[in-house]
Image (cartoon, rainbow, N blue to C red):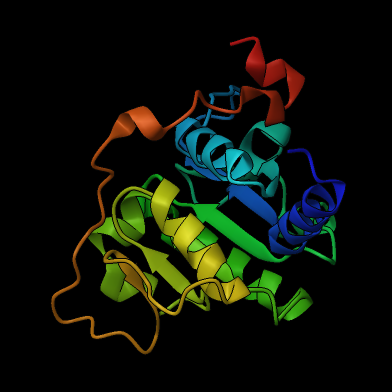
Length: 212
């Protein structure tokens, strides 16, 4: 039987458990001053998974939004993408959680600097690092100012981190490392059933990227 009070209570509980989560694709290091874009599928899958769980998601694709902005690193390499100040300006002050993808290990320095600057701006907001770099070099990634390091697949792990922060659970999954973790034998987390993952949330990307 339909009960309007039960529906109202359910909606209130859902709103209280919803978090505002920002996912960042960082600037890249490239060898030629040539603008190009790509779809950061890893973040898009995470975004869609978090969204069906009731969270509000925003993606900041710092590379694609600033892919014609080049900063010379040395004679051969350039940093391409938005600078850190422009990335931070796109982060709303009421954000609850920030996730940063690090798809390549050579982006470590760029991402460490980005985490440092984000923490200077909003120090109380937890920051998560995921991707190839923290998965393969967690002992280095944990030296950043990030609060959580994810090894392996990111969909279930960042959802678990969101639940952990909101108090819905007091347990972190394998594959999640903090500065207080036992890092001697870290284990990666992998999704057992990929059929639970919805299609990537391409609607959250800049329009010129979705046309690729």
